[in-house]
Length: 171
Image (cartoon, rainbow, N blue to C red; front, side, top):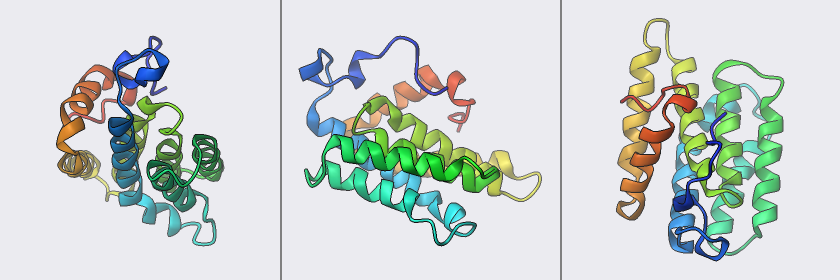
């Protein structure tokens, strides 16, 4: 579970009654795509012939440019999550990160899911005894990628949802 029971209006677009601008929604999607892409190799090393997670990341980026619809990006995200289902460990988490990035076009709050699953992937790929350090490094890398316009929003979201996101944002 990565979404709160009550939706945060900061992650609902203005036209739907929230406060999120379209520009910030696109920045959230781009950041989520970057988080997912950073660990994508952990999936592709196990399933090199399965393009679904990479396609979800590409569709998320294409959505931000207006090249595909929200539905197309969301569908690609769902397919990426389907690629994860029969896997375990780092590869599974990396595919879920890509899937979450794809669905940010539909629900902006999935941005944290992409980041959280990427951190879980980094932890799972780490040598024994180094998973916590690997997770902290991934978390810090992600924070370094945050555009200034959404930095405070995402950091506050991490603070608020850390408990339901497996406490991966303690970095």
